[in-house]
Image (cartoon, rainbow over all chains, first blue to last red):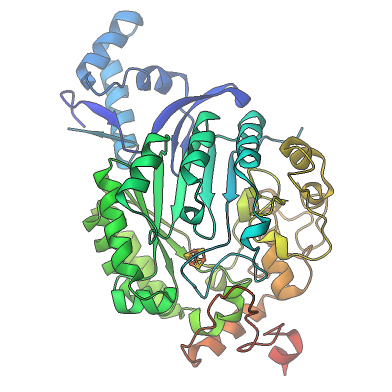
Length: 90
Length: 377
Ligand code: SF4
Ligand code: SF4
């Protein structure tokens, strides 16, 4: 995954609220991921239009952290999720 | 505090055009007349979501044998559940699939019996079945629905695992589930014809490992080493009454789809009780919940909360006691039964006792096929 890539949830993967447990989850067939607070902030911005760079810009404008650090975290998250078949992106 | 379940396995029917000799349905199959109706299933889905379930597996038998399948998908999806259709595919056509997609179906899991049509049709006991499955897979991906290919593996098809992986890719599946047969019910009667050898298993494990690395980001492969070649059991269902519940075609609420065959239980009936009462308060769900019920070697074992003592159905099938440690565990006094079964299978014939409604799979194996005395003697 590169800054220019546009991440999307892979077919069958959905971000949804889990009210019974007071959390959000990424649901897939026989699989479920519970993102931590940071990952959830990032995943909420996945809409199939925004690139990774645009997601980083959005977060950098809202959080008091260096853009370079944010980019490293965001790329690491998407690379991990891509390897696990949760997101696609090109 | 009892944790909320994550998923519901809805066994909509036991009817199925296939006759797999390892079918996980109970040996005593439920007839169509005893099946729950649409409205009752809709209530079950609402109650499951309210209880905390996030996902429903619409299974069977063959769920497409239900004429109200689209209404059932709509009800489950409307309740907020992630809906997964577990199908053999032979009854799918474009119109039915379009109706399911419109009803909110999230995912299709399609089973194949082998990578080669001739062998697949023999194993499934259904002439022409494999070709229909391939057509069904194409319909699923053409409808834009995500596809998991499920391959149940055993001695008679495990050597074609590379071809099964190729098939998953060719059909456009995002995920491949390689599931070893679990030996209770129908499969126990066919165990000698199905158990893989150690060498086969090692080759398969190596195949999975290299394919996982090569296909990272393209195909997810789920694979678990089978019990008969393991030293420790799997945490069956994630622990009894911890994460899953199943509802049988006739409405019994079960901690696992195979539990119906365990003797000495009065499983709650969803037509008479709520899913919440069944989950939280029934004796059946509480009997093996947690670790309080365990006896040695499980009691006090460091893995008690990791594998929860393994599978209750396998403990009953092999040790004759549903409260015993799963014989897949090397610490179980019955563990030698598994090795003996593998050795016996090595020279056994490949014929099957097929799943048939109303016919018990007893002719090929005695009721307790590998009793302790026989193995010792
Ligand atoms: S295992 Fe085979 S016979 Fe049993 S329900 Fe599935 S497809 Fe039908
Ligand atoms: S003794 Fe029981 S808890 Fe311990 S590993 Fe074996 S099955 Fe699991």
